[in-house]
Length: 136
Image 1 (cartoon, rainbow, N blue to C red):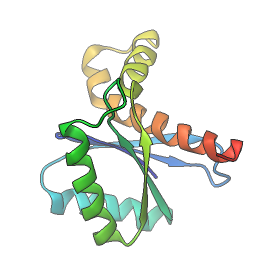
Image 2: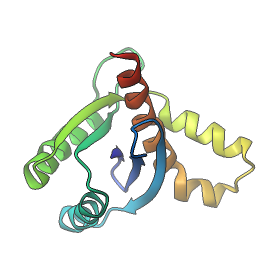
Image 3: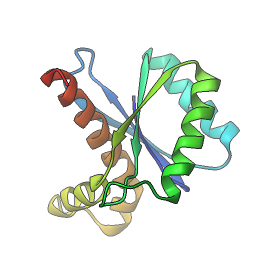
């Protein structure tokens, strides 16, 4: 499972059964940690998720900023609550890539806002899957 964790939403993606491609699942509108966990656990159980890949927001110069700390705290909590391993994947530019892709697809601004984090989660997970295929 791939996650793009933000303050207001969590984009969720899943890999296919052969771990070749990532597909969009949903964007969770964050209300509370308890509700976030309820939704995530539901997906984890239904789809038999064994590992979570989480986008870590690096600054363009490679340093970690304040949002990175929030993501790390969320991931520590998520690992504790689910018992699953969480792996960080560099998410620099994933939202920009997702936005450009959705604009090129001629999607309305309102619709883009609803799905951009899920598309970013797809890019995060796909990047990880591609590394695995290359043996990295």
